[in-house]
Image (cartoon, rainbow, N blue to C red):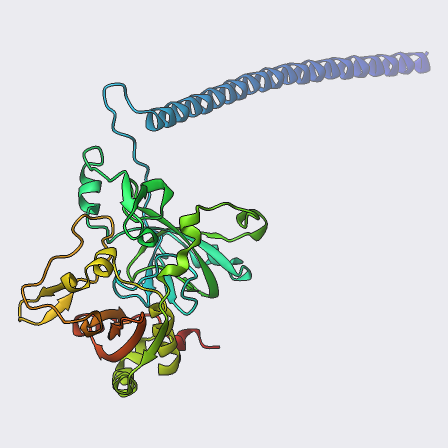
Length: 391
């Protein structure tokens, strides 16, 4: 009887425990199911929120793209009531330090004077030195620049629509015959931008040493691109016959007087410190190469005596600027002109040194002397020189 009672009590206890465990399990399952539903709901809300954000970003991006496209279209297409063409945001990335101190004597084309050198100083605020990496592996490069010494440049920038340019210009090789502007490389253009090829001599930091240049000192540079022979060198390219005869501007010979050597030696003591040339002999070779071509303007060649003008102190100076595009390139002097063309003294300024020379009737050049030009020499501080590039 006692055993039966204990057995019943044990059975009841076990039954109760199982019922309690079953209830607890059911409650736990209910709790986790509810929690899972809450998590699923939150995940769903987050997914909806994320999708809405992505949709907004995509819409904003499409809106920006449409706005940029509309802006570009507005910039590139002039308004119907305004024929003024749009200008683009361009600024120089560097400045040229050239052996040619003035326009006079600067070659009309690149590569004609292989010894002509220039140092392109990049503006590090716009052009980090790393952007020049690899350029030294090319032998040549293109230089895109501004004809900053054009006499009509200020008028052109102020109001391009009212600035007139001549549709035809005088061609030096045709003794003044006119050709269409875009059939020439005249610097006087609606957009005064020049393009030259030059030899890459060295790259150092934010500086680029070039040779064979036709760039005057202070030229602002807009861009530099590598010269690639397979696409830049066009085999069988055609040019007009009048351009093929460029040798008519070559002189018969270039010689130097006895005085020249001593005057150059005197000037070189100071000028050599800021020179792109290693020695007076190398600088003399530069002079010879430059004067191997008739660097005079068309007006000076046709009317050599009229190229003289009077300076304020009464000394005779020749108007050496190349103004072949103008009707009256130079003014007649008030003094008695020289008796022959060989009596005319012409002047050329290279690296702050004024080179005086004569052109004889047989078309031979005699370089007489060299002297320092004070206003140019004093300004040639902190310039590139040969010692900076010497290995």
